[in-house]
Length: 69
Image 1 (cartoon, helix red, strand yellow):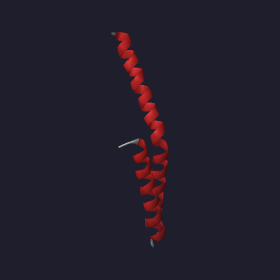
Image 2 (image 1 turned 45 degrees about the horizontal axis):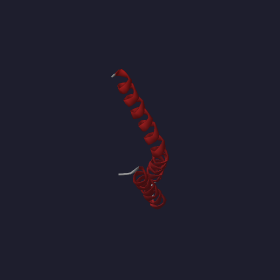
Image 3 (image 1 turned 120 degrees about the vertical axis):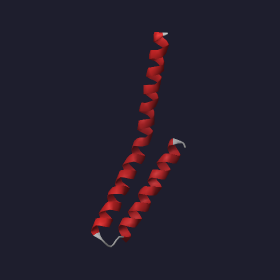
């Protein structure tokens, strides 16, 4: 799965939970879906950044291994 697909999936799920929150009758259920939607949206925004960080870490480890050899 590409980063773009993962971001799209998180955005889709966030919107789905926003819809459930709007339809919820009980406040606690509405709050649950609202919070979950926000967390999914936040995660979607962080995916590209986390991928870039992980890539830099892997490159740094590879350079370190190459240097040690």
